[in-house]
Image 1 (cartoon, rainbow, N blue to C red):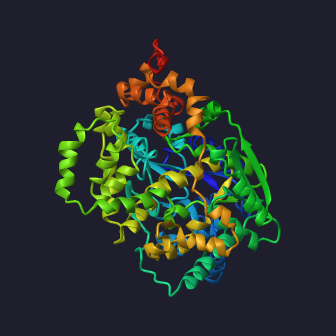
Image 2 (cartoon, rainbow, N blue to C red; image 1 turned 135 degrees about the horizontal axis):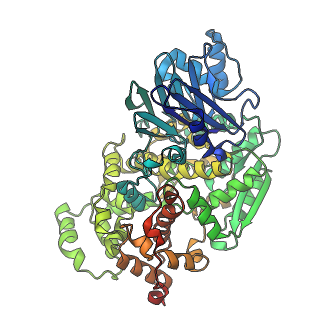
Image 3 (cartoon, helix red, strand yellow; image 1 turned 90 degrees about the vertical axis):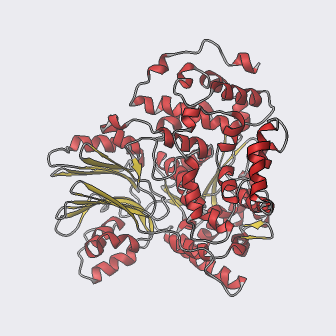
Length: 638
């Protein structure tokens, strides 16, 4: 596991000091080693977290004659088989690392080498003979990769801060991308918060040759609902076999290994399979909160006892102000998923004992675990209403209904076509319509829902559930879930592995029809059956889903209150042109007078502003930051 960086340009335009500066920005991703190649206008760099082949895995790694070089971030879980195949074909390998396998596969197959790889990866290969750079990102987007073409050079890096460290002129924010953040809490691929910098999307390759950049897709989710097991038993046997293989592959490491255990179905299933595969107790890690409504630690404890793990638990009493400041300083982009906080704490706990940890992420997107899927299918019961009647309601009736009337927003939602109803439900748009929290200029800077509508329209599926699962697998999964896991784990120098997102397992699950995932309103139907089969306690499986929840509402009204009041209506904040002061004032009034719980919306606004102050302004000093608000918001919230 590493962080990678690089620049490709004309001869003489790249020097080792610049590449070292880029590497220095991401030492947390690889505290164990640094490697550079600077030659003829090409600079490659890496920071290494040593996991496999601790002695021989130094990068860059080369082919036999030194004309092909690679820097690599990730793990290839089938590298041992691939290594033997390469040796059988006459290749000479000088290390036992997974990185070297990719170089020789590239010699044989060129860009198509990615099809042989089973794992998580982002890598850069420079082919000296062809003067060609190849960038690749894994199928689901577990590992990040950013790039920019600037002044006749191509820059790439695992994290944006590496690019800005040597090219601060690129620190020009993109309002359309920031609007996407406000709508979804993250910025979907391929956009970033910066106009000149892009994310390489999951399942894509980029080639840069003779100043020309070409990006193409090499993998996508297969068509949904094409797999028809003969019986439930047959389906369970296949699922168990594939997931067991995925877990076993991800337990290969030359360093201590454990599991992040939340006490939910997904992580408990992974731990059950790890315990079966291990000859010694599995190390498991969980956190909890004093507030019982948000504390899943007892369920994690029950799973740990059931499978005899060496369990480590931490009841978190965070310095929430310090945590928010620390995380917003490290964010390349604003990121609004507040569960990054417990993810950060559990990764930090795990890193005290292990270097690698398996997690249960991905199960909700594969097996329809989110509550919104059930709600979405229920809301389709109103689709019998004529489209013309629903349109009349939206255009002629809705605006006359007072905003405080119960059910007003729900009525608008069910009047929409089902595709728009779902995308609205996962976006900020309903709150913007209710409260005008964002300025009209900001709202006009992009069409954030268009990307989502296109994914639904082009989904390789015919039934509504499969289509929204495809949408979330292309947007929410890489943009939020996997981004959170990567950033929080790497911030603590921990490698996180995700068995449920092994692409072989995933392709089988994708092929299952919707009835295997949701049956009679029961979500994750077949995964729950598998978990029961593996011995996960029923008390863990059959309870209300919490996710990685935290007491944000309470923090907002206690520890974070002063920060919110100090920040949100300052001239420094409002002069950016994103927020409508009247709408924000109403939002805060309703929240602090406890009329409604607006903590998720307030969090999203707060993180955007703190990202500007703690990250962006390190590169672009903001003259507006000198202003101070003489009138405290406390006057309007009592």
